[in-house]
Image 1 (cartoon, rainbow, N blue to C red):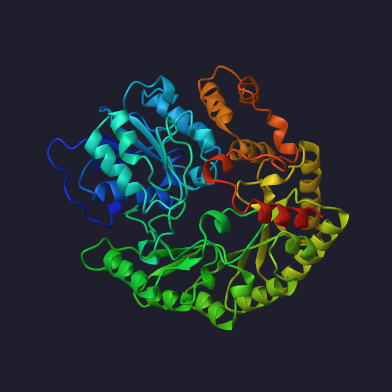
Image 2 (image 1 turned 180 degrees about the vertical axis):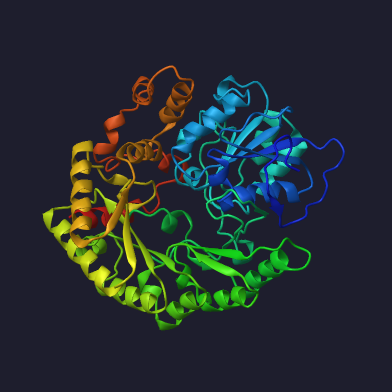
Amino acid sequence: MTGSRKYIGERYLENWPAPGAGAPLVTAAYPNSYRTGMSNLGLHFVYSSLASSGMFRVERYFYGDAPGRERPVAVFFSVSYEEDLLNLVRMLVTLGIEPLREKRDGGPFVIAGGPVVSSNPVPFFPIADVLVAGEGEGTLPPVAEAVADNGTDRKALEERLAGIDGILMPGSIESTILPSPAAPELFQHSVILSPDTVFPDMILVEISRGCPGACAFCMATSIYRPFRTMPLDVFESILETALGPDGPATGKVGLVSTAAAAHPEFTSMIRAARSRGVDVGLSSLRAVDIDAESAESIGNAGIRSVSLAPESGSERMRIRLGKKVLDSAYFDAARLLRRSGVSRFTLYMLAGLPGEDSDTFAETERFLAAFAEAAKGAHTAVNLNVLVPKPRTPLQFMAMPGRKELASSIASMEAACRASGTGISVKGQRSSMNQARIALGGEAVGRAAVIFAAGRTSWKRALKDEGFDPDLIHAERGIDQLMPWEEVFGSGGREALLQRYRSAIS
């Protein structure tokens, strides 16, 4: 089932029908490392959907893999991070596939979806034959069926997929509307266990989609709206299937969510896992969702490390960003969780916020000191990222600070952490700026990615040669003209985004 590449120590959680004689080969590809890709439920979904159809022989392919012996009829990419556009192009070159769509003669077809494509598909126009926007449960099946029925006939594929919501054919149709959100019973979970992931041998289960919050910088509240939760009985059936006598045993399940404790049956899910002798892992929690019952459940599950995302230690800045959570909520959560046995806290924060000033950092220093006191005896560390303006969010219009301003912001955050005795790790500025250029760009960014991946010039030079100003990210944009993705999805809701943006920077 994995084609020409084999991965050590894997265990399958599902059995799929054997493809028929002569079934075409397709590739489920992830434009990053095996370790990252196998930790991503988007890749599990694509692979499982293709394999369960019975129409194909399915292989997986990750960045850095050697190409297989057989040429697939289509490569299905799941793209979660903006910078992986560059890896996607490099992977096509390694596979012997011309990365520019207009230069390809027939297949293999290049098909891409995922959060990055759903937020702004335009940089992928020069590269992909088919783009799948929105939630893939409703859009991937018709694409797979069209590939199975039409092989490498491009014209037939375009005719088959024309007009389906959420499916873009860059060579012919360049506008669409997003399909309806997926039903909760279609939420995803791991289909393969691997010892070489961010969460070794852990079954990941998506217990909710979207976010109950409304942060001005977050794509989850825009492209995965509304917030939906997996029913408890669906979660329990997944546990039974994965952990029962007919499935491979594992001792760990991870609850994947932007706000795990916001699930109305959060504590019941933890109890359901623990009653089967399974350890529980959590993604980020919201402080406002932590009460005595949820904190006790977390402690009883043996969870000793928790992540919270205040974004800023300044309450006024946090509220301006749409995160209307008071400092006291974080201190209360820290006390409850510490009392329940949590001994390590990671706080996700942002640098380069609109309107940052010396008061922001003084407030952050006081916040960190008070948090450390509330979590007394626990280790606390800040994970600092640069705020990147993302499409279809209120901050899509924001001028990203320049390199010197960001360096100053990061230095001030580091000083605040030192003064409060809090550890800190910082993500690099260059990566954040590249994220912004790809996130906010148009077709020129995709063409530049092809040139850069070929090693013929620098990334900035390639962008300039294709007509994209790399410094565009440092100025307001789109106030009086449409953004690239608005040409595709329409500009509905634009005025509301602009109003929230002006409120955030005022």
